[in-house]
Length: 260
Image (tube, rainbow, N blue to C red; front, top):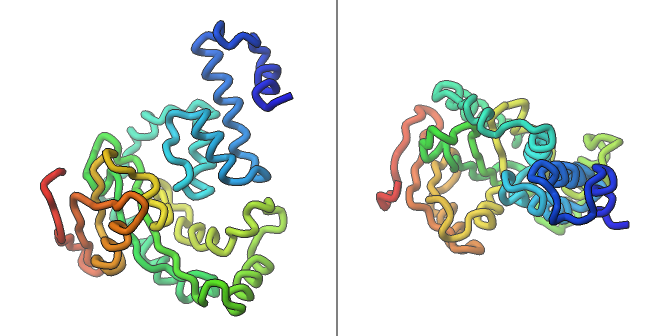
């Protein structure tokens, strides 16, 4: 029996899907979405489940495990995303979150992690000053291996991190990503409203024709960041690039084509 049939049987739905009501359709999708919480299922399959079962969670492949789980749980539990957006982050609260994030990024290099933190950018609704959607602060982080990838030193460091810090009950899928994942967990550190993604994954989530892409550099070299985006999968180019001074908080516009 397929997973599709199992879900139908569990919900006692008619086998003829053409007779389903809107309420039954939504119940089916919520039940099907529960499989995306099963860490025994490979991440690419869980991403596919989310894409098939949710219209709200867009481009799940760029989300961290923690953010993906939270959004899936919210949808399963019927949490209204509009209600969440109403609890918007204030300007003062947002600046405090960014300050603490940058402090933790500095701490990473002092910790025995396998990766350090490189560039950090702010993007999304908070960067665009889109007040109707500024319920999360979207941050992209570049993680850099402390030893050359593929080297014995890096392999030893990653094994050491798994053996000393990975939870004993962690699912097998987490084993390979743990040295990377623990850095993101350290950066997140109970910061509500902070949504972290890998800097290298942004281009995959923003194909041409999507919302105007702008970002503010919180840490890193502007030319290197822009070059990486332009050579990415979609040749991503921002309509506005700004840079924030980490000491004064002053924001300088480096490029603006007037789109926003």
